[in-house]
Image (cartoon, rainbow over all chains, first blue to last red; front, top):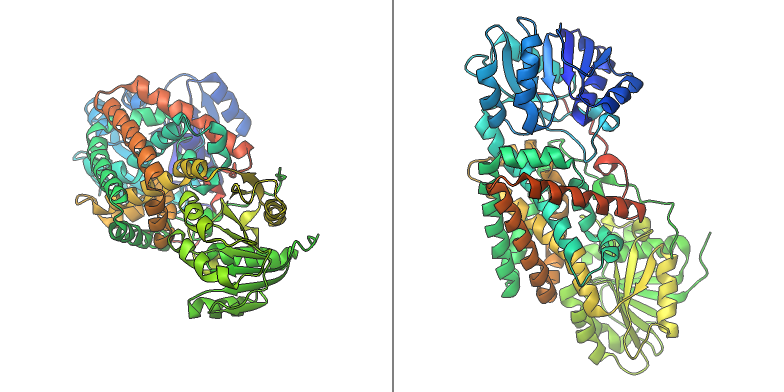
Length: 312
Length: 312
């Protein structure tokens, strides 16, 4: 069923995984009358045009008729990009973003937003390990949470905030309003720490001098391969996330290293009781995640067994 | 195409994920004429009979006519189980296992194997986060590696070793012979460390006093949910793995904590260059794993987006 038009025109700046997925979703459901996209990269612009997921693709900023402008660029350049597009936005329009870190964005953007323009930070908790315009798909946001961070100026109950909520729900998301600082702590736990852990593990495993890279690859189905998916995520975006959410990341990472060190001690002392206790309590949370519709119940994420490989 | 019969009769001790998967695979491809299973748990025996994946299910040990006996019990009880079944095995038969740790098994079982019986340790690098007889499936070993650890008595080129290799290949596996100690170091890297990391992360995340469990569940799609799958693995089996592969696990875990601490330092000092370098080199290994047929190329492991959840 097509959605009623929520915005007459939207402008998406950045044509990567998230930006192109928003365009595709809107293209499918009609939540906006027109979609314009801007990307500074000529090759991305060419791909966006070829994909035919929006009405117009520009390389440069110019006068915008958009009712909603979404910054879908890496966290490190969100404030800079906001400053560039704000002078071109029309009165009454709303500025938002999709960055994985919110305090630094809110702190950077809020002071430069002129009277007559609303700003609400946003973060759709959705993505894959792939990046670029071709990696996007319309269903990316289906049943995923989108966190919006209102401000004292543009509050949760303001028409601008409620309209943006309707927009994200039209894209299939569930929407929650949250304080930017709390968002950063929650995401440091559920997202930033897991990514750092995965990046570090892949580094450790491939640096072992007694285990060859070929062995790591061959026997990766024993657990390691799961981590390589996350560690294949966009390096630039993740560098920015860690630089911009430093305090929260250092806090949860410090706790994690403590917990890991405690498990190391349990292994060293042959403390099977502690290990069994720790390993038993973790099953519950998996069931809760599946019950909450945030993951599939099928074993191995329902991976298909590859059928085209011959034994040696 | 049915396989030629490799063993007239096999006995599988332990009817969990791995044991019941072997039975199912043999049931489908006919690599053994008859499959007998033993499990000490009455409920498991009942399920195995109901599943109809073998010719006979016993609760107790008795005179065995099997040409191959596979110990598919947790690592901590493999040696004990070997001692119990060996007196009932017939001359010329082969004893093997499927344990995730090999040195402790080889060290424990080798001295008790009588003349006339062969013993080769085995480890199929396959499994899911689920356990029990109902979790098994015939395709579990397809294209996965199975490592066999021969001994000076039963060497790699012995008829017994070559026959066991044929058996695992009939189950869809690729087979490699390896020294038990080297196996333990490789698997400490590709399997044991990833599991310990995942168990620890789920512990850390659910112990945060400033982030609620409900928030961890809701926003788990940002990365965390991947770790909960691995951390939902059989706790008893994994306790045994860490207790039995202590030295190798402590070695790789120590290195990992060092690498993680270095990344923490880079975050603290805002060292974007180091972060970008570390995050960039990890993509290559993912591509190698996919090229080697050890994981699917589809984003998010090809997870299906759940469609049955309504937004709030």
